[in-house]
Length: 167
Image (tube, rainbow, N blue to C red; front, top):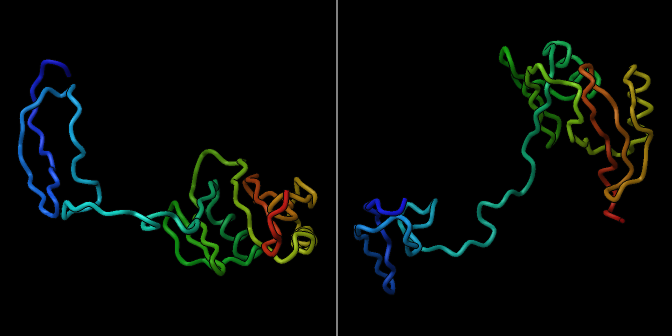
């Protein structure tokens, strides 16, 4: 705010020595760069790949009936139940980690793409289990993909995990 004075700590870098001083300034004035966030020592660090996401660790899917959804994801999709609370269930198969979370809003396209060896085989297998499909297998830039519904009407996808990216 113009006209108001604030006290700020400014980090001045002089060769390898860093000095913290307190100065009174008008807050509308531009200040020199202060200590980078995340560096408790106050030093300057050149980032390369540190802290950049490497993968999606887990995804969350909204469900109304947690018990029915656990049955679908464990019995039909063969994920292992790792644990649960009253409102969440934690599942895993290989590197695929999912959280089923109780919600009033379901029936969404989750954006979840299960990597499978063959979407055609997955479709045939899940149809035999009574799963409803909303998309026949189609070719996409990431590989052949098919889409189906979970018990809450959420759209899930199965995509060829061995395919190369092609446009």
